[in-house]
Image (cartoon, rainbow, N blue to C red):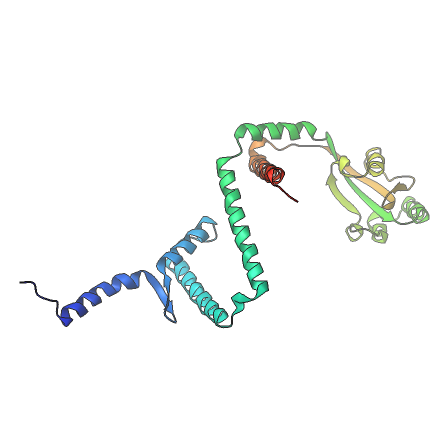
Length: 259
C-alpha cells in the first residue's frame, strides 16, 4: 500500500529544501533574486585584475553593490529609461565594444608575440638608436629682433632661465628646458644648430624654424644608453601585440565590402 504524503511531511520537505535554494542567492530585491554565482563572477574579475584579493569583506562589498544596482535598474525600468533612443544607442555601442574586445582578446591568445619577434624588434630599435642625446634649453619668440635682443642680454650676463619666461611655448615657465632628447626629434634647423654647439654654449644668431625664432643653449651631451632586453621586454611585447592587432583589423577592413 502506497501512502500519500501528509501536509506535515510536505512542509518539512519544503523547509529542508529551503536552505539549498537560499544558498543559491545572496539576496532578493523586490522579489528579484541576486544569484551567488553573480558575486562569484565579479569577485573573479576583480581578483584577476589585481584590484583585490578574495575575502569576506570584498564579497560583502560586491553584494551591496549588486543590490544597489538592482534597486536602480528596477527604478529605471519603471521609468522606461531603457526604451529611450539615446540609451538604446549607448547600449548597442557598449555591446559592440564588449564583443569586439572579447574577439581581440581571443586573437591575442591564438597569436601570441614570440620571443624571437621581441628579440628582432629590440635589435632593430637598438641599431636605429642615436649615438648621443642632448639636453638643451631654448627661448622661442615671434620676431628676429626679439631673439637678437635676448642674445645680447645673455652675452651681458643675464640668466637664460629668467629670459626664457619671455618665450611663447610651453617650456617658458620651466626655464626653456627641453630635457634629454634625440636630436632627430626636433625640426632640422633646430637640430643642426643645437648639435653644433659646445656644452654650455648659446647660439650667436637666432635660429629660424616654422615656429618662430629660437635662442638655444646646450646644457649637456651624453652617449645613449640602450637598456638591456630584459628590462624592456614587456614594453616591446606590448608594442608588437598592438601592431599585430592593427594588422588584423586592417586585413578585415580590406576583405570587407565597403560602399
